[in-house]
Image (cartoon, rainbow, N blue to C red; front, side, top):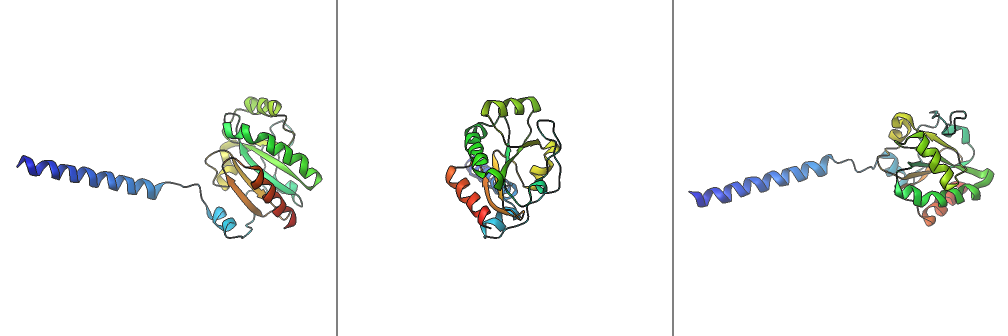
Length: 182
């Protein structure tokens, strides 16, 4: 009887582990959204949250994506505690300088302390506008759950490229060019 019990128990344990694995994979949010799917298909969906105001990090007037209509916007979700955000900051600042009057990088902090965010901006010599995404309301509209994440928006307010992770120079260059010619 003992010889039959051990394989039976092992089978039940294995089936339970497989069931947990299937449940975990099926219920996991991959970070993908309808926005990602549309952009991957070559569509240009309207950027969500364009009229949502977020407090400017420097204390100035609230920022809205809609305020930049007619210009290319590189929306970047970041935080001072995010190592890849630190790594990509110089590239984003160069992009800000290259865009000039044709567009802007628009930073949105994610679960960050205002003082830490301001210190990060000073340390990295960032000149583009950043706002505090209080309650992550803007991030939720972009299905942002991990940092950094970047969305390139054309002059008509449509998302043309998404980077869920640290941006590369090649991605940013191609995405900005696509947005400028849209």
